[in-house]
Image (cartoon, rainbow, N blue to C red; front, side, top):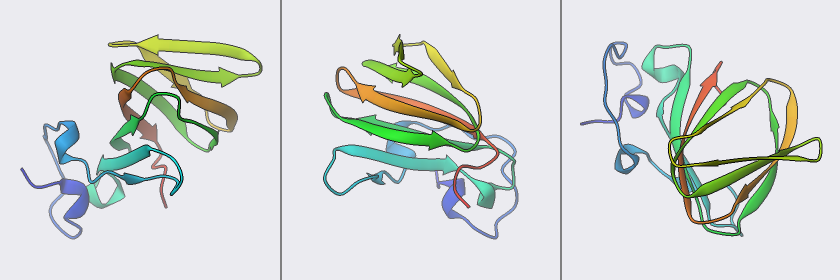
Length: 123
């Protein structure tokens, strides 16, 4: 299936199914093994973004969430640190992040996750 997020100008997506191989993963930072790729974004005609992330075990990064976000862990064990407290999730668990929150992400193992943001996280 074509990636609707890459089909700018096409009709809005009504129903779609994805897996991580559909995501155009690219490195978030050149020096780290952290990859992200949207499968749904503003070009898809909706109000949310959906994508996949892959973190190598031990990778970590600071982040300022400027949107509401849910992280659904599909592989591994992932921690979000907020205000000195660890929020750790494993396969099938969800971490919710409120807009305007500064956090720290940490992959405790090799991790794959799905992120859903409202509104879109990229301009």
